[in-house]
Image (cartoon, rainbow, N blue to C red; front, side, top):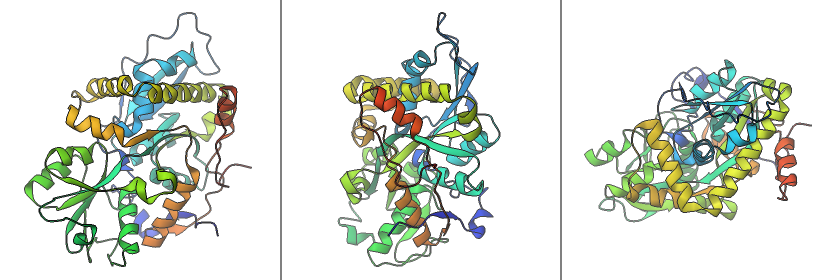
Length: 371
C-alpha cells in the first residue's frame, strides 16, 4: 500500500512563520542568513557559450549535507558546465527562507531537505517547485550523554533535542519514539521522552549546560556534540532500507525549468560530475568543502568534527524518492501533517537524460513524478 502523501495541518501552517516544518530541514542548521555570493563567479569562461539564461541563481546551506553545492561551487564544476551563463549563489540558514526565495524568484534552483520540499510543494498546491535530483543521504545521528544514557531504553524520561518542531529530524525522532511504544505529544514535545526543540547552533551549549541529555541531529552538530563528550547511540541510516534516506535534494522553480531546460541540464551535469569527483576523491573533497565553509562562515571545522561527520554522509545523484514519501507518511502519523497527493513533485527526466549520457543508471521517482 502506498504511503500517505501529506500537507501541513492548518494549525501548524498558522505557525509556519515559526521554524516549523521549517522544515527547516535544519537538516542543515548551520549557516548564515541568505546572502548573495558577491564574488558571483565573475570567472565565467571567456570562450564559454551562453545558454538560454544570462544567469542562474542557486541557493544552498553552508553545511556538510550540502557538500555537492559547496564543492561544485568551490571547484568551479558548475560554472564549467554553464559556460557563458553566470552562476550566482546565495546561502540560507533554513528551508523556509530558501523556499521563500524560490517563490519570490530570488533563486532558480536550490539544494534543500525533504521536509521543506514537501511543505513548499503542498502549500503551493503543486505549482512552485519540482525535485529534479538527489544530493545526499544520511548524516543524522542520535548522540547522548553517556553518563545518563547507556542504552536506547534509557531515553525514556530524558530530554532529547531536535532542531525544530516538524523538521525532518523531529519527525524522524517522533516516529522512532512511536515505534518504541512510547507516547509524546507532538506539539508540546511532552511525554515519555521530552523532545526539546533547539536550534542546531545552540545545541552544543545546551548539552554542555546539562539542559538536554542528548540530541537527534544532523551533521556536523552530532560530531560537535561527540567532540564535547557525547556518545553516538544510533545512526539514523540503520533504520532505512539499504542504510539510505534523503537528507538533501535539488529543487527548481517550475517556471525556470520550463523556460530554461538547457540551464537546468547544465546544473545537473555539474551536480553529477561533482558527486562523482567527491566519491572518487573523498579527502580532497572534504578539504574543498571545509574551505568553502570557511569562505562562507568565517571558520572551518576542526578535524575531530569534520572527519566523522564527512564519513556519515553519502553523496548521491539518486533523490531516494521512496524515502521522501515515507518521511511524509511519518509526519502524518505524528499528527503534524495532513494527507495530500505528492504526485508531480518530481521531474527526473532531465537528470535521467544526464545520467544516461554519462553511462550511469537512471533513478526512479517512486510514482511521484510528473506525467
